[in-house]
Length: 240
Image (cartoon, rainbow, N blue to C red):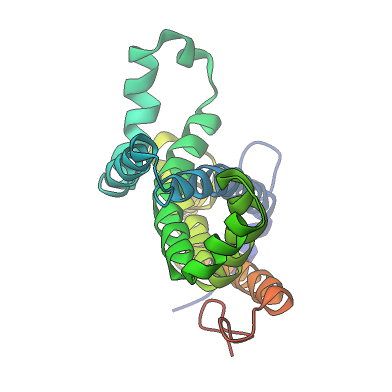
């Protein structure tokens, strides 16, 4: 087998080289993953908290329904629903860019998984944490804000690392609705150049670099925020 890495320096027909096209696609991949991560963290923290609230059965049911709905529908199906079905049911959504629809689909899907991690983190704390907040005169909201959630998030950093890496890799399904990310680039470039081996090796390397960067950033955060007795430094994502 011969290797022709010069393919990346060839013009793709639009005045760009395939290398430039690939890095543009990498940028779209990181943008989709980054925006979806923000959506997932905000909604996941909210729904995970709802599921642990005392004396709030309706919020608990809302959190449980959210998790069961978005966790049990395949991601690709959710992307198709957001891209093709939601705009037909809600006409104003037709004006929303496809990029945003994919971010919402990926963010909502991942939020259900993060909500489960948040719930587990809160329930892993000793009940004394909640009672201490109440003894200080905190409301339920203040107890969660100042006592429970800061502790819970430090405990769940390792599983959050895995979810963050999975979100980055799951962004590859955006190709199904023609978002110009890495997987879409690989498919189109392979068809145009017939150099699938080189194309897919390069794309795989970019995915690996991106996931490894997420792992190392989260490992650094975990080390800085570790709680003695709860977290061992360097365990994020199966670290060293």
